Length: 218
Ligand code: ADP
Ligand code: 5GP
Image 1 (spheres, helix red, strand yellow):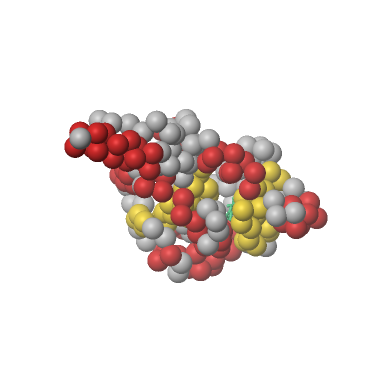
Image 2 (spheres, helix red, strand yellow):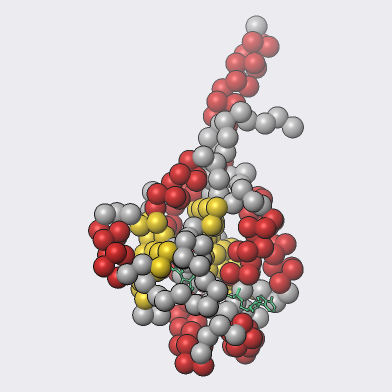
């Protein structure tokens, strides 16, 4: 197989789902599968949950600091979700994709839409995760054991709003069996890395082929 010499461009991989469908679990599995993937650590104004670390799961910042970042164009996208602000800082994303590393986002449909419509839209792969049923979605939220009954109620109410945006995504997976969904996700990522827009070295490679071809004609 002939390889191009120029490194490939990084892909922006977006995972969205209603809360509890399994996107964080799938994101963790993707990160374990390929250590070169960068996770986009979002900034949020919500309080940390037990076990969440600042700078690892989120950058936990105040509302004024969040607004300041937005006003300085420091966010690739941002949205208001469950009464709090969430956003993806732009600088680490640019650094990663320019050096050929893919970036994984766990964000909602509003963020996915903003990234698709941004300058980086053509380098974006978006995947929506659906639960097998609403009853199972609730069961997963309860079994995760992270939220109060009130927060679970809020998340369930919001879930239809999130699900209703399923058709704006490139791929949609029904997460019934976790291992099967993980395998499907890896297949999608592997294929999308080969997209023409992700291989800036192709043009030079084809020019080289053309020269070789023309030399062969002489
Ligand atoms: P999200 O990030 O979408 O809110 P999580 O990844 O936290 O969801 O998953 C919610 C809960 O459901 C977790 O306890 C996780 O282990 C579990 N879970 C995820 N996918 C499956 C699946 N296919 N079958 C059963 N449980 C699952
Ligand atoms: P949680 O509070 O459960 O961590 O996240 C709540 C919701 O906010 C999830 O749907 C998650 O995907 C979304 N979210 C997390 N970070 C961001 C972000 O940076 N931007 C957007 N638009 N949504 C985010």
